[in-house]
Image 1 (cartoon, rainbow, N blue to C red):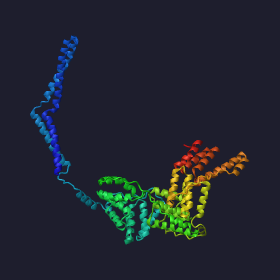
Image 2 (cartoon, helix red, strand yellow):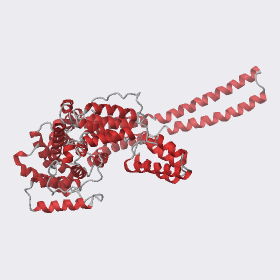
Image 3 (cartoon, one colour):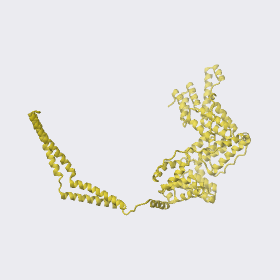
Image 4 (tube, rainbow, N blue to C red):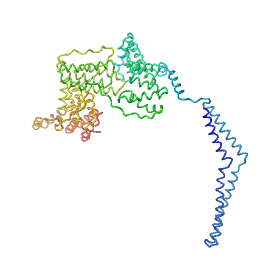
Length: 615
């Protein structure tokens, strides 16, 4: 405190000294007077010089007279200014000292008066340890979960986009559990679906019952999920109850990343950046891109580091961890199995993945992987059921739902089964003769392979074939198809990236280079017999035949889609038939089909522009 007063007094004294010097010495007016006196002397010298110039005959008398008159006028004006400045600079001493005394009183007295109103007189210095102690006191006395929720708006109901049948299902679950509060699975489902509807208060209450029912068997994931729901209900604040749940999770699993994220967030919210920063730094540097805590940390750790007094630049994001799938050893072992053994092997992997997702949850990619695997195995009913459940799990994450829906569509599924959490889990169906004949989808895979070889297909279909072959243990064929797909879509980087991603997720390491000497399958068109027959037709029959081929191609693209070349062929054919309206409609469909594939759409556009149907 003494240091503050010393600095304030020194500043005031320096200000008074500057003002006093100007008042006492009259420095401001003296400079102007000196300038005017200098001008007077200059004009006098000019008059003397004129007389000497006339005497030497440099200028005439008449011209010298005019110059003398003008110089005399300026001399009088300068003399008048010099007298005025000298008079104004000479203020009475009494008045000068009075003004100085008044200035001193205003600066000192006014400064003290303002500080007493707006400052904090008597406040001691706040050393670092005292600030830490104050932060700890504030953390311990922060509002409880109930107090935080009481200050926030109540839940207004499900979001408008929530399906009515889903809302009805959750209502039934609430009613059922009112009579069965000890139903562990029911309470877990209720917590999950209340959260999907945005009702986080009810969700964390249900999760609290889950932990109560489990007792000593509650896992770290249970506590982090409970803390997560409480933080969501408190609009991002970590309450004392959430902190307790996080600490219990860390007692069970000291490396739990979600718990570590919330510990760092809690310290950051309570003025302890020195504790929050190292926790978040270590978590960020050990995490893969795409993990849910990575982006929130990246967005805030720069400011947190500055508050902690650390110069820190976050490292580049680590590549996302690959999906769990069959290892190279698994695929090598599967290659030596009989069909029955391989079918049991694949079914076992699928069952283990399904059990893990049911008990522990998982990423959207893992749910999509399960849906695709069930479809390949021919178990479409369970695939549709898992699809519906995945939609419910990721109801609040549009990107995840889009990935799952795309995978299901690529697997040939038409629509999901509505998820009913009250319904018992479907048992694994008993094998039937058809399933025994094709225990792991070999026939379906063979049909897909034949169709792609003959007719081509979308990047998603090639990716599906690669994944299916890998699941069956046929890694050699999967790598060969991978190399061929890279060649087919070499001009479309987005398609190649999608295929590479699918192959990597299937556990493949590198493609087998495609033999460039082998020409890719040509697009379907008229055969030699068709052309010979067309040559003998009349115009009407020939037009009918061409129209039939165009119609078949149009139906194929409308039902299953196809590569850009097929869309170009259809548009060109319709142009040759003079059916520009149909060509315009096909172009409109192509724009929808290739909405997320700019390269594919760019390949189709020239045909539409040549026909004049592109916008």
